[in-house]
Image (cartoon, rainbow, N blue to C red):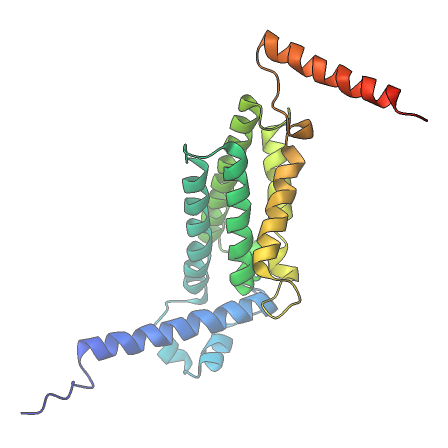
Length: 237
């Protein structure tokens, strides 16, 4: 009796289906990123994958369903990951902000096409997809805001408006997918590190000092300022 696997076994069929679905996702991502959601037809996707339109319906219900799955794959994971980093209590707020930015920049660097398709198609997203997208974006903003709030309270960050600082942090991250490419002259590790440091520096307490929280801290801070001024005045002109 032959031990040769059955070519039509459920396992084989499952593997083939998975490969075809991945190709569909990859081609749809490319087309949505290049043309936008409204500029891409279901037939365009079928042609890119090498399937007939009826055959494509065996894998996805519609163009909208495909986009919803692609958007969820990016935004749900991003919101979950950022929330997980923001809740860590074993590292400082500074380190958490740094880790969040590094993580988000790396995601955009490694999955640039998917992030570009979101930005290109944002205005054309179906309502159900748009609602999910907006909810996850708000979740990311809340997570970053909470880290900044804690950093301000602990004196790691200077007194800033946490929500505005969080929006500024997202501004540092959000265009990476447009200017970074795997074959560019920039090293992704270096990009992650530099942008994370830029984000931290934008909110860091002046001179890296913590904000005074007790009368003794206030006196020490004033003493340091006086010493610095005396040093400046004593320098020869």
